Image (tube, rainbow, N blue to C red):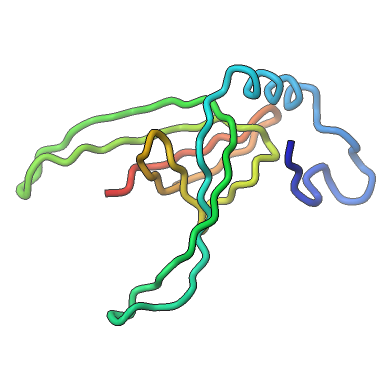
Amino acid sequence: MSFKYGQFGTGFLRTIPPPPALRFNNMVRTRGRAVTIVKLTQTGENDYGQPTYSESSHEEKAFLERKGRERDIPPGTIKENLIRLFMARWAAIQEDDYEVEVDGARYHITSLDETDAYLMVEAERKI
């Protein structure tokens, strides 16, 4: 289990996570699906002025919910895919400079919402 610094409050206000978070963590560890969290670090720029990144990754367990649809626009059919991940509250992930990889497809994180029991991550597929 990985912990972030200061996740339980400043000082000694709380020493352990709340019971709903512990129950959710036990459930996601036994029944969750492995997803890859990719951290992007900007290393410079290419000849065209676009940033270049280096990647480091690690695995986390999560419950996964998918929403897919297709749109027909003038260049052709576009497949849109949105996912929602439910992870432990202390999962090492942030909204900026992080991506999620599930089944070989990369997703850009659009939002993070923390509840009493879990961290909900919403992401859309990169084209």
